[in-house]
Amino acid sequence: GAVVSQHPSWVICKSGTSVKIECRSLDFQATTMFWYRQFPKQSLMLMATSNEGSKATYEQGVEKDKFLINHASLTLSTLTVTSAHPEDSSFYICSARRDRGLREQYFGPGTRLTVT
Amino acid sequence: AQSVSQHNHHVILSEAASLELGCNYSYGGTVNLFWYVQYPGQHLQLLLKYFSGDPLVKGIKGFEAEFIKSKFSFNLRKPSVQWSDTAEYFCAVTFMNRDDKIIFGKGTRLHILP
Image (spheres, each protein chain N blue to C red):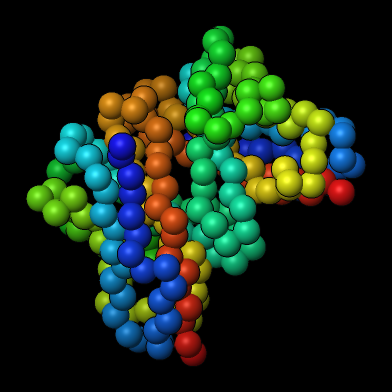
């Protein structure tokens, strides 16, 4: 159990377009999910906390209008990169926190975004 | 502010050598502690975790870590490394007053020589 999926796993888009990335908890409910960004050979940087039924909480320095987060259900959060630019190219990883028990977080496999 | 420090950015060892990767955090309250591994081209995998209880935690693939509260440390160890252990290792901490956010250290790149 405790599987988190992301879709797509890899996406290439043109500069100026928007890209939506999905994060799903497949076998548990997750009121809270987290979005991270990882640049090549660097660590994961927390971007925002996604809360079901309410607005996301963004970390300092993360543009809210650039990275739109929607947590529409207890098993799905989406991250939309709007008006993408080449500098947005990165590896985006989500995690979902189990609502019950130890409230442990489980990570998705990540989505590699390349903006040309 | 709470932070996580990994002191070794790049470690090179020969096979069968012993490994210890350092991890320290700055926070006096309750924490949950993790070590993750990321093999080349692959996604993050959990090696081991500490929530409470025995401070010596055993994980997968022969790894273990010891939580020393007085030193704010959670060092990762393996008595005998293998070439397949070549990967990036991340220490991560959940500070329990920060809404369970996981903060990652900068990572340690481990390279095992065959």
